[in-house]
Length: 450
Image (tube, rainbow, N blue to C red; front, side, top):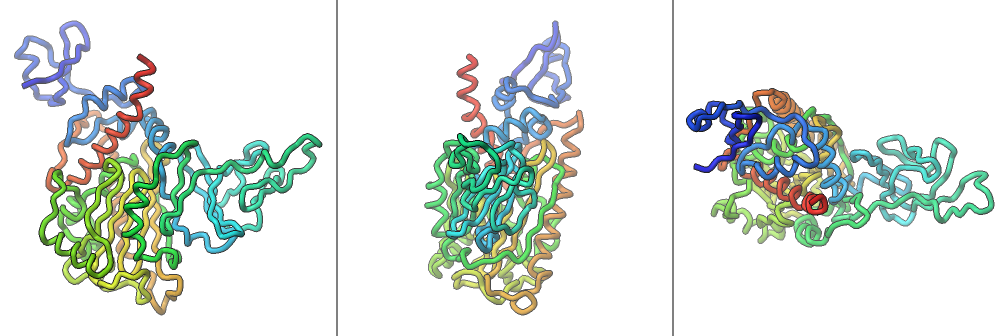
């Protein structure tokens, strides 16, 4: 059996099988050095960590703890890729805005008088003060609180006092951020030259179109901080191996079926799931499993538990005024993920969006938004507790799971364990995507260094 030895000192070697009880080295006459995790990682050894990754296993400790790798994740993924930001319906009228922080970047998204939604760097072009300090709000103009430089809703500078005769306001508008409105879902990209968005948009539009998100409103929104690395948040999301022991409310409606949450290695689908896809498609709701973008996004309309039609404690619809045109009440949930920032559930009666935002190497914000038809009336068409209680409970349970997982990974005894090929295929797929993405992204800098 092949194995890798790294020399630590004269006569002392480290076996990369990561088995503390390994006898290969002592049999070879060497002194066995116990495997110890590296708590940090430089740009250089990140290549080595990726190269020695064991497929089907969790990542080594630095991927979940290292400030250096966290910074690399930001620079190579979150600062370059399209990120889900907000539902378009959150910005109800001209002057409505929302802000979000992505690493070092502060962004403001605002609805213009022309109805267009635009994104800008939330930084005044005078001395870079934050322009909009609130998480969301309603304004007539964007006014910097420092020296009152004033911008129109389209980002143009319209007032700056005492700047001299040579000052050109047309050269000092807010800096734009790339934005796409995908059937009512706002995505932004911080890169100067954004990557392709069309492949995802073309794939997703037929699935999302029947949900009529342009006719939605925000019924409720919740943001929680999970004290865990953003990849742990995703790993937990990408499997339901943990559901039966941790999510009693969710399990009333979400099926305990690894095929629903996971991704089969060969792309196969059981006949039961295929029959569901066919029935949904016949009712005008695209459902077929689709994994695209080198594994970056997935779409599939999956069935719920038995007679359940929505994520509620009784399995009944949460909203009487349906959002969208899904004519099949038991169509289940359209599950959509797009790495690295969002997973979503679109049901016949309402929709849920989730946004994942890294805050630090060991903190992640998860924002959940419940969308209902714009004409649905709380207390008449839906009860807010009935609508939200399952996922409020599930999110809090997931928060505890992620935090406990993170705490265990801090241990010097941590060794990456194997994933279940049956129940954790989705986790394997996510980690494979992450590793491949980072390897491709780091390759140019490595070649330049060489």
